[in-house]
Length: 436
Image 1 (cartoon, helix red, strand yellow):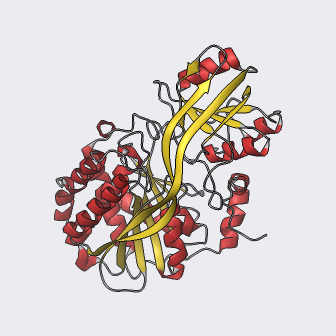
Image 2 (cartoon, one colour):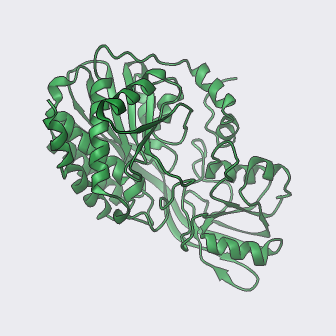
Image 3 (cartoon, helix red, strand yellow):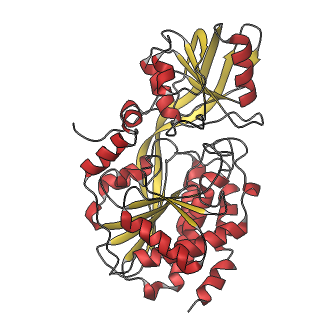
């Protein structure tokens, strides 16, 4: 029977939830808006037919934005603070490091200076360099301030957190500037003294994860996940309202096919992802990893027409996605490498099978994400529905009893991080979990 396909393709359940999320406004981790989004998501999952829809609260390091500034000799330039920057100020010579590749830091004298880096990497470079990796290279080299320059044009300063799990507040004040402001800083003030300041309220706060379930009461489960929080400067439609809308849409579709589920499916929308994967990290510490058959983590869906699934070296995950693509005559890109930057990672780093579900893009980085331009009109309802059809089928397949997916040894994941040149970034950001 394929009538479920037409039901999903005409459903407004996920899209309606997406509209509700973006209309909240600020969904920053620990905020009232994040709590409201969590409650709405809990209720939407229950209305879709999932059972035991509930919130699970946990403590986080709170951070609330105040004023920030970049002051050059002749002018003050527009900027925004990077979340979890300390509330502090610094003065020093500006050093423009371009892309901020590891080798750029090796050759730079940053002691007592302010480092500026771009948010992208050159086409020839072998891997993506995350913002936090660039930040902690600057810290290690003695910089007293950090300026993160967007590569996307349009007068859009980028946001994105700093800090580590052990030290949630970063070491030096950090701000984001637009591509245009960054170009002006590089042209006029590279080698000149500038000042960077950040004001922020730093206190204790609470976030929450949302859980609900479908299917039989098996010990083994498939996790279908997203994150409900977003940065405070925009609607958070792309990052990651669309992912949470997808989880709700999948719950609605799977409730109609519940008699086909042979393994429990647990829906989890995490809080506090944008400030260091805190919600998923909390869940990973509590969960029995051996009971998790697979994770379908939706973070980056709907941005582009075609799904892209990072499979983290699990051949069964790659094969399952390719089989669904062939069955429906619709492309799905699979990427076998590791991807350590979303809510699957606190599990995958220990060998739990997991997808990072995104969509293909020719852009480097997040595009409109993490900027004021992360708004609803960037997304098409048709794309949400098409991708929901494929992910519904994939989840049913993963839940089949005969679908076996071998967990990997943590040592294998650690070795892959080394082989794929990802270990350096993981270590410098305090995210390396393995004993030598």
